[in-house]
Image (cartoon, rainbow, N blue to C red; front, side, top):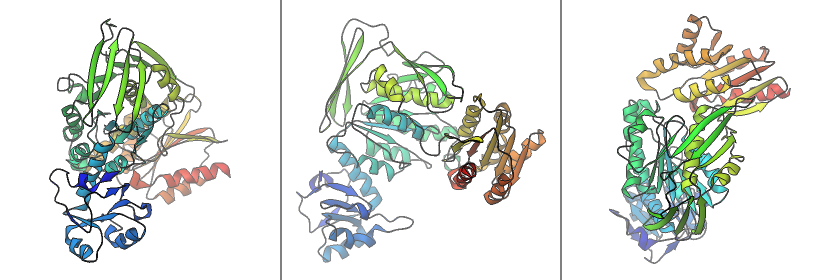
Length: 510
């Protein structure tokens, strides 16, 4: 619930209202006219395909308590008697209203960003916390300036944690989303070569994503650093109270790769040493801010008890014993996913889960659709990693299939990586070495920039074929013997490589 009075208190707002009582209370805030319920506030946003202003009459008939419109249209709706709020920019108004909603509902917000792994880490963490608490998390890839507010607006009186993914491809987007979300916990998975078309280089990526940590630290929230990433390791001085995670070094939460299962899934040990690993006997009380409220973590010999109290979220209690170790076999591929799992476990631990609770919850962790999903068929096994691609995720995928001991015949079907700017050719050519290390027998490629990889592979004497279209690649697959093969399909979202995955699934069933 959110009142009009609270909306009008939003800092620097330039709202105008008509036909509305200041005491009006809204039961929900939506931008999709199909989701309007009686008492909702509808924000009219103009998108690429639809303009919300065109649905104003429909949402009012459906019971919307008011509509937010662009300032230029305010007079029209006001004169026709509609309960209306005018704003210079309805997208900005939507963000501000979502921020007010977040403050009113008060559930702790955990915000995640990074070049790679943020969606996977978000999903792992939501699964872990969801085994114990009532959790709202980002759906699909709703991680931009519209998606973050949408996630926050899903919270209700009974929400205990919000797991929010924060994405970017232009400077300023992370800061904008973070100002709205006001995180209590924040982490960057890593700094890599993503969205270089606009962020230019890794320094640009670091500058953009660091804003999330800075805003969290300003409000005395908890910051998490993966110190295996050199860019993040250098941030320890800037955030001395950060919870550190590492697969290689001493850290607050330490991971150790124990080996791999037959099909290449990592076996991981996680040690929760904590910042008081010496098991001091005295009781230490630490307080963190949660939307203007306080949560208390009491640490003493043998463990810590976290008590989280906030409006609507109720009272939760968990005991986290410092020095705990757990061992898990992941349901996710790749060493990089060990880092993602480690980061998620560290946050869950700080939020009050025990090591044993975390271990049990990992059994329910599954990869998101299109992210290293493995399908076993009679003739071959297929790994669908078509959700997206960048240089780091490509290399991680190649490394993952190299750990499989069931299939020696490895085939990769790859499409272009997008948003690499002037470095596109270099990053595609750079995939040669990791492909060779993975002992890939055949590379089937389609796309403009992936041809640079094809040329490099042929020059190296490796078996590679390039196709001018996915359709021609599929025609080739119809006559290729795929028996006893492990097949990886991957490419950037715009390549729509899932069409090849669907073909292979149908082929396997025929």
